[in-house]
Length: 281
Image 1: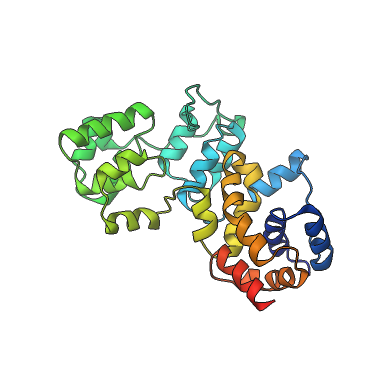
Image 2: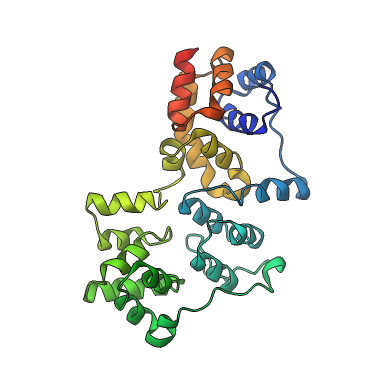
């Protein structure tokens, strides 16, 4: 496989989905180091920091926030795709994990960071007033960035049920990865609307990310860090890919060798990569 760490991490993630004995044999054949736990704080920090520049769907950032871990929150804060609402919520200690209510401590490295400015429309008109007066996407996004707590989402839902919010406001709220699914359905269910939500990076879960998002190399790179970034969610991705990997690759060394050669330049999804490698072999 050479010295390409991207290929090694991508193949290594998939190899963990087959029988351990077969995986060990394949690793020797294609040059993927044995899977090892990351116990060193320095190595963990290096791997995590390498992720902050990588383009990912917004839902992936939400899965990290759901860990309610101050250090991981700091990683999301530094991520190039973090939105104002995420940074605002992190500094205010808003919990994202299902059922959690305790405030999340702010990591020491962020204690002197400034919160994104409060939108003038929110300061003048309040949350619902600002959303109702949003006549373009930019002010709608600014108003939507002030929806932080679960109580805020309830307030928005009640206001929309009483009198539908403007289209821009609904759109800005619907593309928030933390928008409650029931409320997103209330905002719109037609195909054009749901396609836009998907295009904005809102996913049903890690299984969808693992099976429908590409290119495969990027997806596998992120999933290979799942045990560090979103350990509570990465198993869903593993369970979605495991039968495909076993059916198309199994313990066949030739198939894994083909996958290692294809992965870097492959533009399709992970299932398409796995199926192609199996067919070529």
